[in-house]
Length: 333
Ligand code: PLP
Ligand code: COI
Image 1 (cartoon, rainbow, N blue to C red):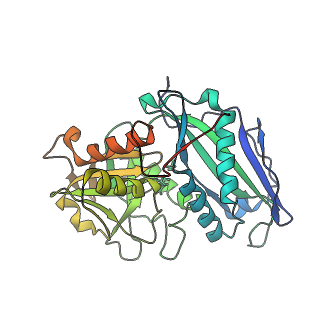
Image 2 (image 1 turned 135 degrees about the vertical axis):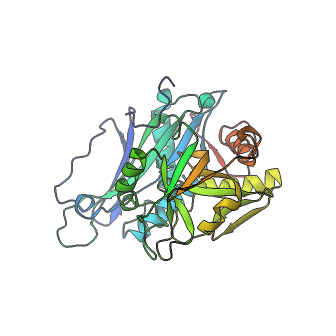
């Protein structure tokens, strides 16, 4: 791709389905990238929306493959349930993803330079409400955008004093409101020269949670992969996959457990993981002026992070077989 950034670029077709009178109507492809809504639509007044993110990749041989779309379908159902929205049936979600990819096949870039076609399924409450209650009508859409890398350099994080989610809140689902909560903090972080915020658990401010748009992992000095366990972070499909890659492909020991903020200096490496972030190494974490720098003792290229990233991206790009069911190939026949 000539401009390899992570940004919205309109593609020719999007998939649309509407929920009315208690049921989902047949979906269709549309060239119209705009949505016209009533001024009191539930999504506009009370933020009733959920979304997903997944990537279609065009391989060297011209096949188009998608990484674990069944996990996104299931997570979107869980997000809908938490947001009092009618889930879009998982098998229809998967069919809609394929239709969107097929319709836009000629704008999907080759994955060879790290580019992909980022798919953004989402759902919004569309009918007018004024009292606080869920909508009765919904729109499900999938659009796609050719994208490049989310992070263009090694990441500088700062510990954030603001919270994006709450205990017993919505941190474990992919609802737009969690991201709205992070907009002030990300603007401030960028202005101060950081790439992302690292959030702590809002109950005790003792444990590491995740960043605004990705999960976090650490590599201990003895080479173990450690990721935070928490009920208030998004269960990342990339993180689940890298835990499998580490243990089953590379023989790396893994631990999913609460990670205290005061453990940061014990770790040799740190990275972010997510669909957009893929696996991106973290250079430093700034805890109120106390800066911890990773990858001190090893070059980035020889790191455990790099070894895991190499295998995961080979699987995601169809260059190495993955576990059963991880790669879905879009059929054109
Ligand atoms: N955490 C947050 C807050 C995210 O927005 C994302 C992105 O989807 C992730 C984690 C990573 O999840 P996944 O690997 O399923 O994309
Ligand atoms: C994704 O990785 O799919 C996300 O939704 C994260 C967002 C920051 C782009």
